[in-house]
Image (cartoon, rainbow, N blue to C red; front, side):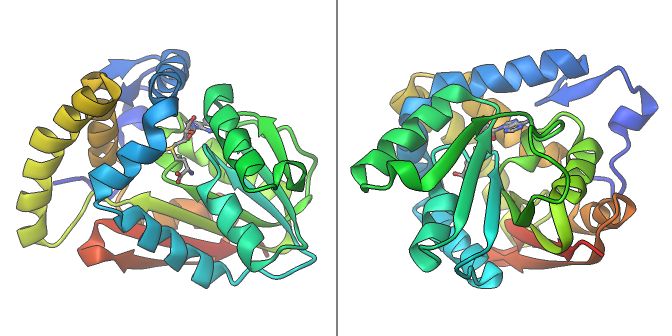
Length: 257
Ligand SMILES: C[S@@+](CC[C@H](N)C(=O)[O-])C[C@H]1O[C@@H](n2cnc3c(N)ncnc32)[C@H](O)[C@@H]1O
């Protein structure tokens, strides 16, 4: 069972988890970059196959909770191939949307998708780390991070960066897999994660290791309750969380006081 309080890096601040491996923080960031370098071309297809298309419903739910409006500025961190930013654009076509990701290859796939939609000039694509965002203080109304926070080496640093770049009254949203599910789902999901996902990764992206890492990173992620606490400790207020699909994923939200 995942502990409620995320203790591993606190016990040894020089070490981080990369899946089941213990590595230095810098090594972890480099390894995560390598994972997404390796899967960028097949990322969208794999997302559909691994989740049976469910990721689309989870992302749509996130957008309904955000209720995007024209005239606001949106930052999608770990924005990858653009799924969240494109949905915001669809709902609020006259808004300023920035997609930021550690990995230029993921952003390149996102740019090509934007070109296909006739939207290339409608987004800022920025390479950057969630832990040290290349943006001034108080520059965005809404910050989103979908299936990204569990890959970030120092989660609390990233949360504080979110607080820094958001305006007072700005809103923070995080969509992420949750390490805790209903007991009955836990078994099925565990079998699926260990047996099916790495095999699919091998078959489709010729890379079972990267997908093994993605599965393991979910198990290491803090529980919804612990993450809500850490959001508030980082300076956010009113942290709350909605569990989706029996608790397989969670949408966290909070405001900047
Ligand atoms: C699982 S993908 C999610 C992509 C997209 N948000 C989605 O929901 O489809 C995770 C993304 O996080 C990015 N990432 C990992 N660590 C990051 C960091 N420290 N800062 C910014 N992006 C990061 C990866 O490059 C990758 O594009």
